[in-house]
Length: 390
Image (cartoon, rainbow, N blue to C red; front, side, top):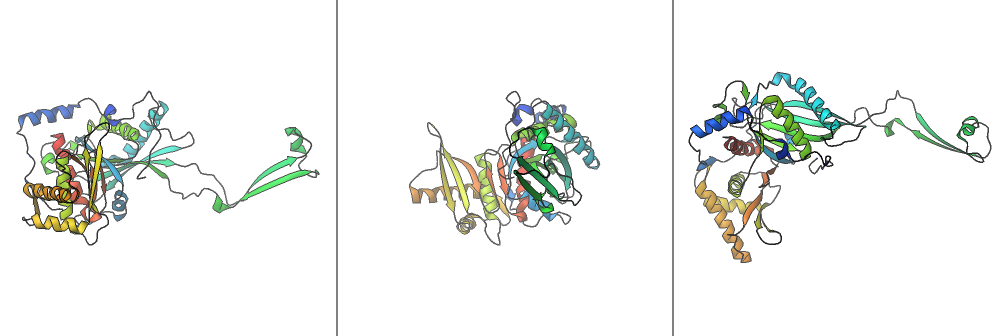
């Protein structure tokens, strides 16, 4: 599903999430009022280096593995009003009915008349930074493939061709004992038929989480569930429709999560600082050079051990990363690049960072590679989502 591309919806319907996620909800207006009354919260000058194995004991390893190595699109989400974990099955039925209705209007992604869509809500136990964080939950849209019903019998497919007659009614009565007839029989064994236990295809996946979200949890009442970080994988038109249902049902508001070059620099430093038993990917940076008629991209790949050695040479605060260290780390990379290629990167814009921990892009895409640092990656993304909401 990493690269799944569903067909586009009909021209009359928009398939862009930003066209669905419009209008300020009452909660958003209240948050805006609180924001105006509070002082501007600057970016912290220091953050803790992500620690490995921060997952809670009750986490499901299979679900964690499912979340890794997929490209997720990031959104911030205002708190959900009157959301209840005890009603997940009911939410599944309601969202499923909503998608069916949208498909009939021509707004949903077409998957064919012979296929049905099933929506499943499930909790992601243990996916939290502290016990105060709400439980994360997963939403999946599955395509249910049509299955053949059988009771252990062998199905026989016969094609009969009787020479000298083209009348179907004649053929029906001349099957037995007719000379000059050609018979073709195809026998399907049970193993060749669709299996009753065949896995359904995942059409769309999204999950909601809050990792170390105390700054937001303290500002809302008990009627709201704070899950500010939303990650989606699948067609944008599906994301838009499912997001619309959540907005109508829980008085919330989705917004694409902005990641800028400044955030990427912090990600590069924090992820390079993580201790790895073994590296699964090179450390790579991608810069975009504005030029006409189209921009030029510059990719710079470094061996992860060399990147770690560079970080260790500038890192002075045990267990933490400071803004000064981030700036110095990036300046050393720019100098190293200029020394080898005689190209200044001062006029470029950092658009992607890839490490063995995770990769992120300014278009709001992220791929998490290492389960040991899953919570650490989500903690920073939660911080960015909360900051965008506030």
